[in-house]
Length: 256
Image 1 (cartoon, one colour):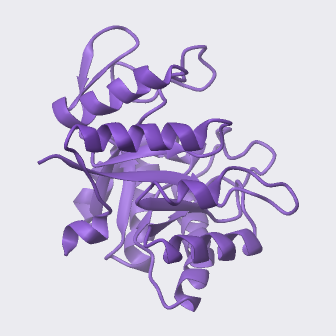
Image 2 (cartoon, rainbow, N blue to C red):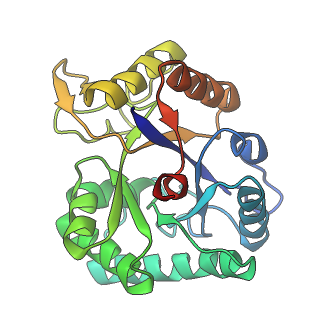
């Protein structure tokens, strides 16, 4: 039987500015990547989101990003591996404090936005992030783009990894995501997204924008929770996966 985790980036509200449908999305996904205050989020939002995830039995992950609130962490910054290490440790520590205060533990770490994409292709940045996770808690998983430098670095150091695929993003022939600046970076047709997900899980293939098939490993599927139809889309993805006899299950359940 095929099985897969569903994750979503959450806790991205800031102050009086709400973003996303966190409470509703948490009823659909099995893992939550919670913003740690650099690209989005604040202490109150982190606390609330942690509580909601724990109430629903959803695995909690830290979602560290670049220090860029204005750009939502999606703009590249010229950082050194040491800076990547330090900012990753700092942000995991911030969210981990709220998780520990609730008597729980972090399941995973997933970098956000530009930091995620930079680490997917830059071996030194990938190693720095993997080392940060390992030094804090070697039992945590590291989520990274399927087949990327980030998951390779994590596997070399001995971390558990989850190869991540995206429901609503298009791919390049080398397995990377199409940059958001590209007019065809996002899949806007829900049915096309569903078919892409099913094929990635069941066939380990995704069709690149250039037309060729790319081999891909799908351990966890990223759903974005900040669009106007995000909840309906998340439910559609989960319903179609289950209709195809694909078990949607969190990693903690898989270990039991």
